[in-house]
Each structure stands twice: as structure tokens, then as C-alpha cells.
Image 1 (cartoon, helix red, strand yellow):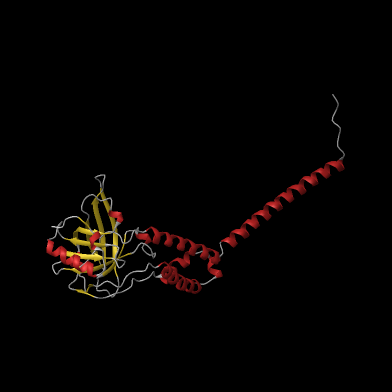
Image 2 (cartoon, rainbow, N blue to C red; image 1 turned 45 degrees about the vertical axis):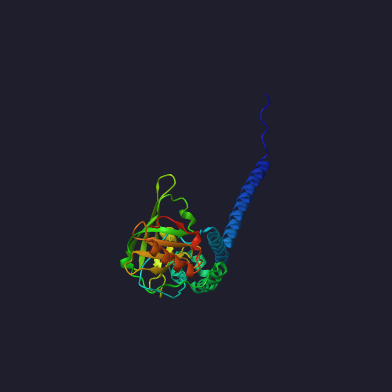
Length: 295
């Protein structure tokens, strides 16, 4: 067996230096890669790119909601006195107030590159344009009652007849709605028996449209944390209401949804016909009504 040949000292030093240089070069490439990745992340997370992404998400989500929503949500109503004309548009999202809450939560790097005023200006111009573009054309304003007493309205109602509301198509029994006053709003709870015999429950909230005398409301059945967004709110307008708060007629300005509501499961034929005449006069296709208990 041959003995190992000793390496010259100069050759050993050369190999050590080469190994050290290779390690240094490898570390430099690693640092360059990390720095490049950081630049790409910072570029992708720039305020305007984030704003563009946010607008895209908002546009896609709102468009999807407008396309897929069945119309106004489950029955809701309130009462006042005699019917009258009126029309008030629903209030918009308080973007500035919401921005004031979210601004301190944004990373300092983003806040240093823009200002709340700039973002508020962009939202102030962009959101109304988006809402106008997505707005669904509706018919002439509906004639509503002059005033609604929310305290007198609270309680249980039966759905005697309805138009539209495909989300109720799976209800085999007669749907009911229960309303509880909560300040200037109403807590809503709708119930019905499904085709499988199980009770179906939908809970939401109704807010009053300012200046409507409580006769025009917007109802939302989405989770409470989504109520600040301009989605999920459906119009509910009280077209007729007797002085005893025993029957009510609720419609949507699109004329695609209508509810005849009563404190009892049925109403007498004369009252039913009077409500149908009002609905027909407002342009609703009453011949398509689905009736539960017509008396």
C-alpha cells in the first residue's frame, strides 16, 4: 500500500482561498436574491397597487352580488297612517369615517407615500361612479305611507301573499316575520318550514331611510360586520297600512317583489282585494302572486 503523498503548502493555501471565495460568492448571491425579493414585494405592495387591487375586488364582488342577488330579501314592514307619495334615496357608505378608523392600522410605509385626503378623494369620486354604473334601473317612485310608528309595528306578521322572493321557494309552510325595535332600527327574524320539514330562519336588520317618515327601509341579512359595505341592502317600502296595524303591503321599487302581510294567517276577501288594487295601481303584476291564506 502506497503512503499518501504530502501536498505542497502553496497548493493547500490556494485550495483554502478558493473555498473561502466560493462561500463569499454564494453568500453574496443569497443576499442579492433576498434584496431583489424585497424590492418586488415593496413594489407590489405600493399604495396605488393595493388601491387598484382593492377597487378590482370591490368591483368584482359588487358586480357578482348585483348579478346573483334574487332581489329584496325576506318580508319586512312597518306601519304609519294613510298612504302618500314620497321618495328618498338610500344613504351611501360613510367612506371617510371608515377610512379614519382604518388609516392608523395601515403600515407606516404605506401611510408615508400618500395621505388620507388623497385616498378619500379617490374613494369619493370612484365609489359613486361605481354605484351609478352598477345601479339597476327601477320604475317610478312608489307611493308610500306618510309615517310609520316603529314601536307599534314591532311584533309578528304572517305572509299572506308574495311576489318574487325566490329564496322563499323552498318554504312549504306559511312564512312569518318577527320585528323588534332597536332604537331607529328593526331586528328582523323570518321563519318558515322547508321542504324537508325543518324550520328555516333568517335574521337581519332594517334601517330607516332618512326623511321617509319611517316608510322606506333597507334590510340586510348579511353578517353584521359586512353592514358597512354598500352590498346586501334591499329596499322595503310600505305602500299601504291600516290604522290598526293589522295588515300591510310592502313592495320593492323594481316591481319584482311584493308582500301582503297580516297579523293573522288569513285576511278577509275585501281587505285582500283592496291591497291588490293598490299594488296593481303601482304597477305590480298581481296576477303572479303566490298566496298562502286568502281568507
